[in-house]
Image 1 (cartoon, rainbow, N blue to C red):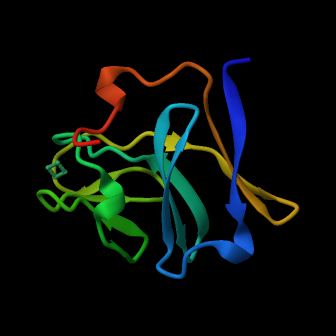
Image 2: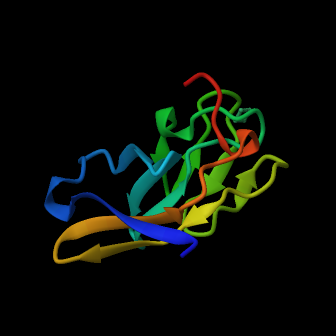
Length: 116
Ligand code: FES
């Protein structure tokens, strides 16, 4: 088994501001709710590794709080800046519980945010 599902929070308890940061299996994960549903990404900007969870979410994208790069949450694509796309994690809702799937192997230094 290379990936594992982790329960996060009941869908009804999801924060009203549309985002939740969590550490699951050693991975820093940002889960966000957009018009398209729930999305989970590695909570690490691909520019200089800032935590994205401190950023604002608007129109289906998160803006990095450090230098303002924007990433589309559904695809991970960098749409405001010239940086690599974000790593996506599968997310699902099972019996009202939001679950996120992350690799069993812990993140490498290149996959961890700074300032944690
Ligand atoms: S660290 Fe995110 S834009 Fe620079």
